[in-house]
Image 1 (tube, rainbow, N blue to C red):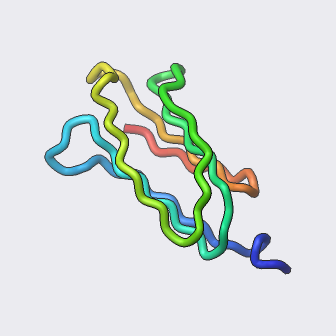
Image 2: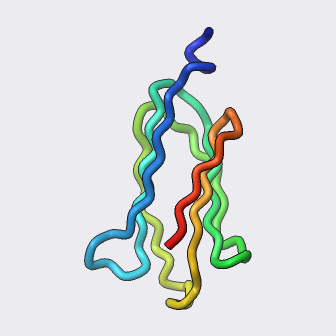
Image 3: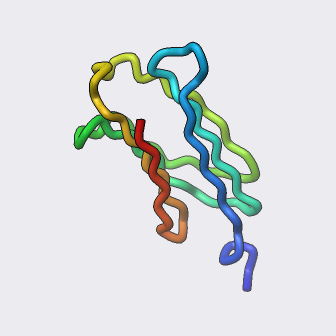
Length: 88
């Protein structure tokens, strides 16, 4: 097995405390790979980006343009096609 095949990935999405409509995304990989990040409000795509991760990647998304009653879903797909979702 190469490192690429055995890379362990970890994804976490959390609302920022005391920050309305701001979300923190943490992606960890023990190798180097590209992950795809999508943010949806109900079925509407708000944001999509491919991110190269080598170790740790942290980013904060400001979703103030989303109506408060809209459900927001984060989808993170790794290079193996494994999908992680978090809905708020």
